[in-house]
Length: 463
Image (cartoon, rainbow, N blue to C red; front, side, top):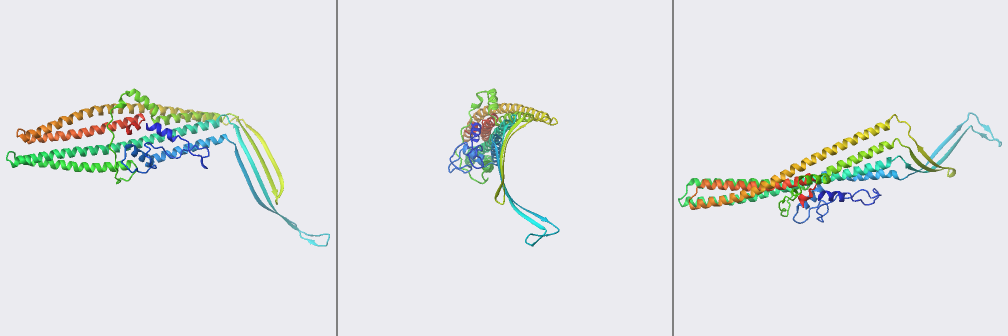
């Protein structure tokens, strides 16, 4: 299924580099079909639905934003973990100094030379310092910060998966829409062929003098209407193809060579019942995964706030060298242990803890609301798929009976025992039945995709 695939692949560690020495940041977003083509490139073959999904995930700006957030959250884990290690700083630099001494009067030295009353001194002072500092104990603040960063990373991964599911649902909807419009085109071609047969039959009977001119005119009108409907449908097919191309991240005028669509859903998702699907949704839905991660992050914030009122212990060491005009002047070294014990902060720590607890309660309430809405979405789409499958069975039976009725009406008219009005009514009923069958099939595909999305298993709609 798509969500576990996305979460597993997206959580894969990155490659160690200058910017990511720990290898925490994932490099490339995951793919679903594994077509072998580079991310975003169109494979040189007939495209399946999984191929189109890969294109959409690679090219859609929404997934690009969500993926950037995943990388940023992974980098924040590295930022939090940096507090586990000591910090080392080196400073070095020369400075030029000049001092002048001014006197109002001069004097005569032992050699009888007159010496002026001013003097000056120019020096180059150089310093070098190396300092090491390590926070040994901080009351659990570092661990809380790391746990919070990892929870935020989990939330970002889940949000990426949720965004990807939304993109996939849009793609599947556009794909199903194109398939439905092409099915309507096929149905209209069949209606056109039947209308042409009826027109030819009416013209032949009129030429033989056994039918009125009104029959021929009605037949011509019916044929023209069928041709007009077919023309409009072909326009809808072109529009649906453009919408699918855009959903896949391609230009709207880009022609797509599509493989035959998969068979209609058999209703396998209904076998477990609504309660089982709701349980699956609580486990699989990425928005619920993200909401639970936000609760975990809020728990970490509480621990971090508590740590502000606890003692901390640090170690430090430094060594400094100074020189004047390239001559070593001084070398000083320090080694220290620092214990910091917070005594009173104006109750700042207590209010920070209260604030963190309130935000945790808010995240917990948000999670519960999301759970309730997820259950409602699953149940509603479960009922919708049941209804669509039942309607599909009825629509198939309707097409069978309408086709038999139209063939019978055409035969009766040919034999001269039926009226052309009866033939037109049967022909119209057959065309309507075909349209209803196409709509019923589209409804099943759509309901199946929406139920899969509600459960958090949209991969089942594309596999």
